[in-house]
Length: 228
Length: 301
Image (cartoon, rainbow over all chains, first blue to last red; front, side):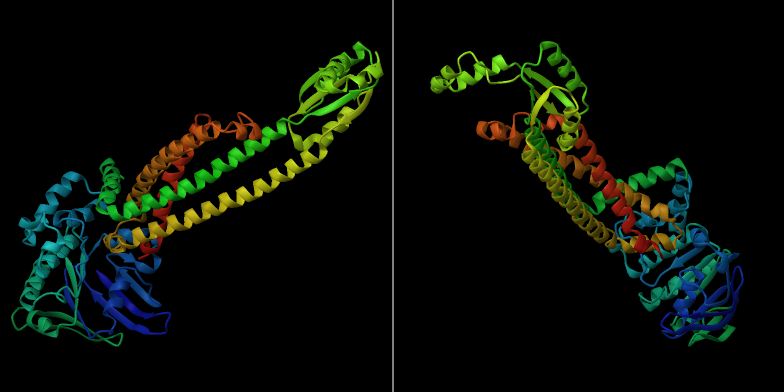
């Protein structure tokens, strides 16, 4: 669950990135966060990952009150979140399997669990054949599916996808959103940040529109291709 | 953390060396050069110190006894001299022996000795060596308290020169060693920073997926330690071979050895335990700490 209450973020340069934002994404929700470049989407993600602090207001993520969270506890918070980046951010020197497995090693998961869970997640994203491949050998869509598998492997409560379709073809974009929808249907909360309005219109669902640091729209819309 | 987790981190440390072998090799070379710079400077200082010490130890204080001092008094004086702190060695020279030796040395001046007849103009004397030459004045004051001493001859000027030389050497070599250590640290720090910079994305990804700082740092630490250890080994072998060859070369120079004193050159065998410890431990720890600290900048995500 994500809850922001009257949150503002002002950077040291004086730029107001978020202004009095209040927002609640319940467990099991799927929400698109849309907005133009510089609207405040990235700031929102940074805030949820506790990469930056809110200047005022309160932020709660998966039960953690971020203002009260000590630096040492940040890894605990992040282990409840799966993050998918636009530029995939896979480790080039690791195979697909290793890229996914190392996230489980971070949480000190037993080797036996890793050996069971990683192939399962790879099957889920349709990459079981690519276990031994390196990122440089994969297409954009495949890379993003590895990133989603990595975000999913520790069974997080929340997946934040930051422009996950930004670097891939439109057809593959639908596949990626479909995959995120499937994951959501299994109970994981998904917050997908995008500036691709066409994609959002097609899938519909809860849409949160940020403009100049403020939420200007937050409602459920029916998709052209999907039932909400 | 579970055993499997510890094993994973150790394996990562070793694997990372191979995966980032170019940077690891650069770190290895920088460490090797740095260790050699510091090591050879320390060795040079030790040897110069030893040579100065050898020259110092060759200096004697001569104590002339009053004329006609009896044998009992001479024996007591010898005991008293041995009891003076800082006195390392006391040797007695009887006036008869000294007279004969003088005659031998000045064989061409028979006329002079004939004129003296049976008179021996010399007096009995003691020659002493002291442990700490810088304490010479204090030692002489203590000797002066002993009765029946006619005169004390001490190489005041030479000792003062040696003391000054030792002080200057200590400062110069100390500064040189400190400079070498600082230069080495800067170079090592920059190399490890470059190595960590090349993997900053990897560090950031780890942070985003919830890795603790320790989880990120341990492999870098292990990696640095192994690189440093091998650089230390290489530096040790190079120093050993070059130093031994140099010592052999110097020992063949008889004239040079006469000046600096036989035995004043330190053999590697005499110090190898310290060298092994300093090179291996120094290399491993400096490199490990450098690697771990360099991650700090990228860890704060």
